[in-house]
Length: 244
Image (cartoon, rainbow, N blue to C red; front, side, top):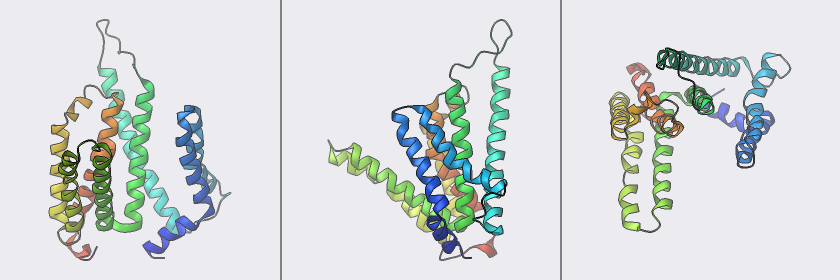
């Protein structure tokens, strides 16, 4: 099965549609109560649990292998983050020599969940599309979201909005260059992520890891840039596809 056919079959699967609906519904209902997030958990993990128990047989061996690979990547990312956070918090002690209590454990749990989910998503996209198409489409979406955000937020001053919207152009251009010059594009993306890290002062997250706003920025804003850059740099010359 080709990558395009595999992606199309995902949308045709009743299981995936129901699971996706539960995820969206759970997230939407969090405005009423965060307890509804359990619906998103059911939609996210329920099908996988049923498949591992052998009660749901809707995927072939290749699809199962790709799903387990993405799950393992999420485990590695989440496990590494948990160990680093445990080391960080255990090392932070008060005047009595005891570890400082967590001020916001909910933010910590959300950060770990976001890292694992993002890693799973990127790994799944790479399995469907490969590094070049994944990087290109992520950058197109990244530039499109930036463009839409500035148009909607700059309704009071169209000139300022137009100038800020121009920042979407470099990301779209990088998406196009991922086909012909993937390694160069990968380096530029990593340098861009490093620039934003410094420009927005995101280094403070190391000393204030529970500031949820900053962790979400790092994951959702810098994550696609870093993931795209690393995936492009991982390409060997003989595997590069000029037309993406």
